[in-house]
Image (tube, rainbow, N blue to C red; front, side, top):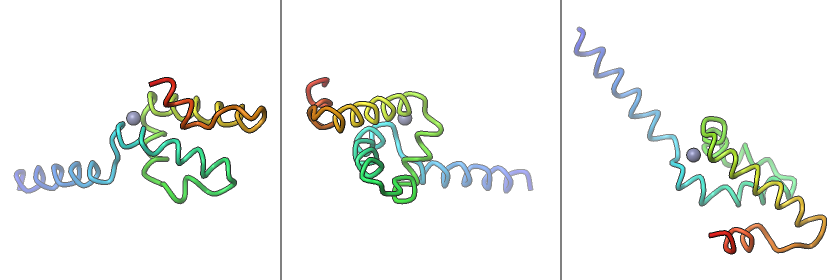
Length: 90
Ligand SMILES: [Zn+2]
């Protein structure tokens, strides 16, 4: 009985993990998320896993907020795109 419960618990963790994305995946996707958002689309609805990760991960949320702010600045002043800025930072 105890063993069965442990297995179930383990499976729950595994299944949860499977649905989550890693910071690396988040980093790859977050600029697209910002692009969707800035073009007026529902980014959270089309990329729910990314949204979930941003809610849970402080580092990626900072990254997202930085990109979002840069994107806004770019829209206002015609600065380089988010991807250009990221390339120059890395
Ligand atoms: Zn993360």
